[in-house]
Image (cartoon, rainbow, N blue to C red; front, side, top):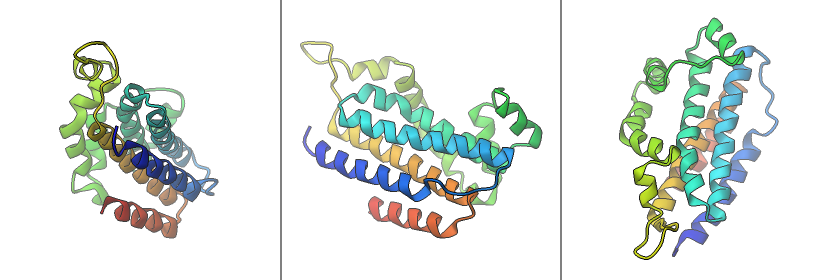
Length: 198
C-alpha cells in the first residue's frame, strides 16, 4: 500500500504525543469528572489501538473501533456537560446512558457544540461506522478480491480511518485538558491538530 507506512509512522508519533500531553493530569475527583474522564481516556485508547492495529495490517479490527471511539468521546462530553447527578451515578453503577442521538441533541444545546458538527458526523458516517463495528455487508466487501476472501483495503480507506481516529483522539485529549482546567494544554493540542490538518 503506497503511502501507508509513512502515514502510519506519523499517526504513531501523533498518538504518542497526544498521550503525553494529558498523561497524569490532575483533575477534580468528583463522580462527574471521573466518569467523563474515563470515557475520554477510553476514546484515546481506542485511537491508539486503531493506529497499532493499522501498523500490523489488522485493518478490519481498526475500522471496527471507530464507532466505539466516537461513542466513548460523545459519552464523555455528555457526562461532563449534560448528565444530571443522578445520571452520572447511574452510569457509574453500570447503567446505560441514553442513546447516542439523545446524547448529541443534549450536547449540541451547549454553546461550544452549537454548530452541530457532531450530529453532522453521525449523520454522514453512522451507517458505515455501524457496518464496520458489526461486520456488515459493506465491511465484508473489503474482504473480497477476484480470487480469494482476504483483506482488500485501499490506502485511501486506511488514511480516512486514521484521520477520523485522530479527530476523536484530539477532541478527547482537549476535553481531558478541559477537565483538568489546563487551557494551555488544550490550546497546544488544538494548535498541533490544526497544523496536521493543513
